[in-house]
Image (cartoon, rainbow, N blue to C red):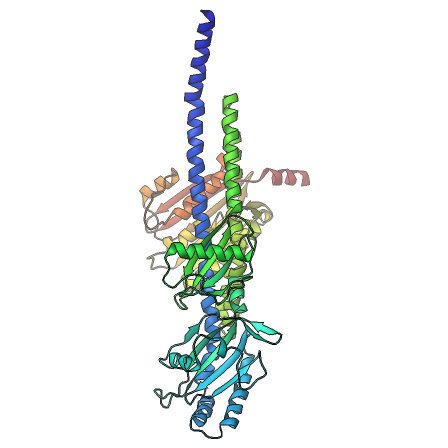
Length: 547
């Protein structure tokens, strides 16, 4: 009987332990795991689509620069006159020779141009082709699906630029490449309706590979046109071939995109996902194949951590709060690092550099300065975004950010930053103050008709750094200020205070309970944000030893 009683009590304790400790813990961790997995996947998708959007912008910028060459040819009065003579049958051989000489002079103004061809109304050809020394046969015209007459008819039918996707590989002796083409009818502005001829500029597909950026272990980009032909893809031998029928459904397209990515071998047999965006200017689809191995492994690792936690719970009921806290922090850092690894900012810096040089070419030095500053800001923000930096570096970054805002808003506000010199070599976490600055500029000064002013002050008070950010803007209603000081942020459509909410959350996560943030505001007069964070312990010990 006593044995049965002991067994019953033991059973009750085990049951109570399972109900009160283990089962809730398991349920919480399962929900957390799936929510985190979903959030990470959504963020990866968002970052990848941002990558594609930047590639699309870069593609349009590059194509516009090559359309400039096309424009120089089809509007040149000297070329129009030579074409008119050929159409009239006047000394055709000599006039064609003069056209070839003129085209050769334009040939080296841009990299990747391989051929410039003129087809006259009378059917004569005049061209300069890098791949062949011939003066009577181009390297590519006979390999097109369209005949010469059909090509002429299509380009001369209107006054827009025509784009022809990459075709079969062009091979002449030891020279070979894939080409895509842009064409336009020649315009005589003395008689714009007159049919003179057409001009076609042929461009090496390597330009598109450069725009898409080199493949990396995290993924690569490629391009398919609206008819389903592969326009550009590094490492592929199927350029110019149909990869899916015109009008195919999204499922068929996705399957074809995966097949293309797998055939290149860049990502091996790793887990991959494909995303796409359409370029309205060309009608082309830009696709990105991404390596999902790190994401999958991270989720598997998270599953293992979950299993370990459950196992420890079965063995012991000792408090695990501190260990769970460390696990969450490590996991957050791992998620941030994984998201950063999904983005290759190489293409973004290249695009900004390209736009910068275009601005310099046009003597737009103010635009060039803004682009250069923006590139520095992006490089600082993307690299190790949750890292620790010296205050002097963070302040310098803030000054560049404020410079861009002042330029964008045509110097609609003044800004003064005062930092105590002894703070400059102390460290803080990156990007903590910018949301408060941004909120003041974008929302504090909105609708204010007086001279706007923004001030930031940083000084030391014993073991703490005190920061004040003050503006003379429109202010915040008392009720909202009271809620914000209590850690309550309203969810509204305008998302005014999401940046501040995230910054306050990060401050508490990085500096714990010792940090203090207080917001004071009066409508019509302005807002003051006071932040108090502890000096890092390692720095404090270093200073004490120096004394």
